[in-house]
Amino acid sequence: MPRLTLLAALLLTSFGAHADEVQVAVAANFTAPMQQIAVMFEKDTGHKALLAFGSTGKFYAQIVNGAPFEVLLAADDETPIRLEKEGLGVAGSHFTYAIGKLVLWSANPDLVDAGGAVLKTGNFKHLALANPKTAPYGAAAMEAMGKLGVLPALEPRFVQGDSITQAHQFVVSGNAELGFVALSQVFKEGKLSSGSMWAVPANLYAPILQDAVLLGKGKDKPAPVALMAYLKGEKARAVIKSYGYDL
Image 1 (cartoon, one colour):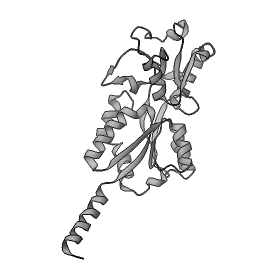
Image 2 (spheres, rainbow, N blue to C red):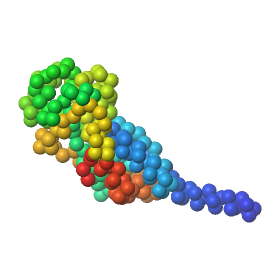
Image 3 (tube, one colour):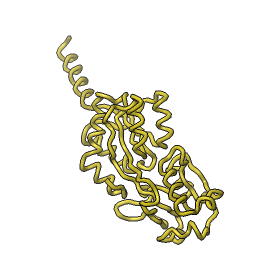
């Protein structure tokens, strides 16, 4: 092989060994922080994270049916554990990357009071939430309303989205006056971005432990393994905390 051709081959091989891509399925509530983390991850490691956002339940179905995802950032801890048990996730790889918080939010700055009494006074026509069958934040909202004793009265007013992103969009667009969303969607750097909000007390719903898992398609590949490690690092954790998640 000519000297220049050999050198070019070595350079390409070296670059390929250090720069790779990882297909990541990301729970919708984690959209903003993960977009920020992905930029940092590429800058620090050379690896590129290709992100898809949606509901955890739908991602589970896609992974079971052979979707090319290599890492899942779920909105719960049950799905990653289930994938490990079914042999689709790398055994023992799951860990909690964030603890989510449920809030009742309205784009109207005067609608949601600090105690959530608006759910009982009923001064609204539509209430948005994510599908509780596929989205953990939707399930948390249902649990909270059940404990508050308002579920039967509010069910006829539900506007249900496939994911927490769609539920949030229903409120933003005015299709619902208020809705149950993730704190991370309306909170940044210690401030409410707009509107009015009630932080749902943690004792009204099961902890939203959000786990990451390395999927079988990402096993032993440099980029997926690097991303799992990066999420545990101080830079990523600082971003996660800035969006209101607990660690």
